[in-house]
Figure 1 (spheres, rainbow, N blue to C red):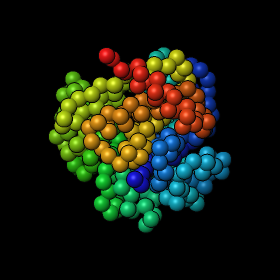
Figure 2: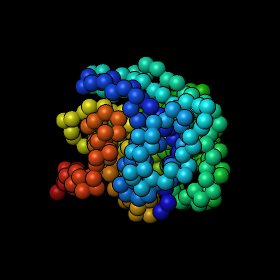
Figure 3: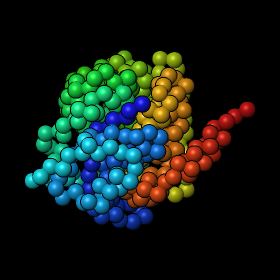
Amino acid sequence: MSLLVTGSIGIDTVITPFGHAESVLGGSAVYFSLIASQFTPVRLVGVVGEDFPPEFRRVLEARPIDLAGLEVRQGSRTFRWSGKFEGAMNEAETLNVHLNVLAEAPPPVPHAFLDSRIVFLANTHPGLQKALIQQLHAPKLIVCDTMNLWIRTQRSALLEVFSLVDGVIINDAEARELTDRVNLVEAAQKLLTYGPKFAVVKKGENGALLVTEQGTTSLPAFPTTRVCDPTGAGDTFAGGILGYLAQCGDAGPASLRRAVARGMVAASFTIEDFSVGRLRTLTRREFDARLEEYLRMLHID
């Protein structure tokens, strides 16, 4: 099924205990698209400034990613973020943010994209997420992400978006803050009362929780000894989930469990290098081999 993603495309500077990456490719839509395109062609809607390096565009062009929805806005500059990870690297400390083009009008959705059947709304202002939903022609599945900024400042608008989507993917702190529930199972169940049919709560190195009306599934993270840069791990996690759902054409409880497993494997590759370095070289054979290892790990007689 056709898969559309809209989200940020940016230029990142990242510092971790393992090094420093200056002015590298980043953004939620980028991480999502690079892994989702391992499963199915991706339609990307985003905007960059005239300073966006041609070599960054070529990274996206090397994958089955339709860039008809990528606007290069003259006179504007690309979104830039710099951050630092320390210690266990569970959360980034933002050092600097320049919204630049993201503070302007959103990019138009190409007419050819309006029939997209599966849609992922990566983290952005809830008003922009709603505006995109309203342009679509009857998608089969819409899933969104969000962040604590919108929970605190745009709660009513965010809940309106939740009432329009089929699934949400957010982290544990966000789920607790939005629902005022400490227990994550209760928090995820509360999310369903806002409208979505399922909720996926990310727990970092502790895996993720999938909650549907049919029940709860908890999956561990893939155990890895190489953690270089966690930037984009949550976005590739979502890319693995939605890419698989688009490939299989089903979003029932069993398919969702399989999709979350693929999201876990996707995230495990992202963290092995700075920026999208590991995703650029990743092959489907490598992905499937690690997925098989992960599924064997989960099997208990």
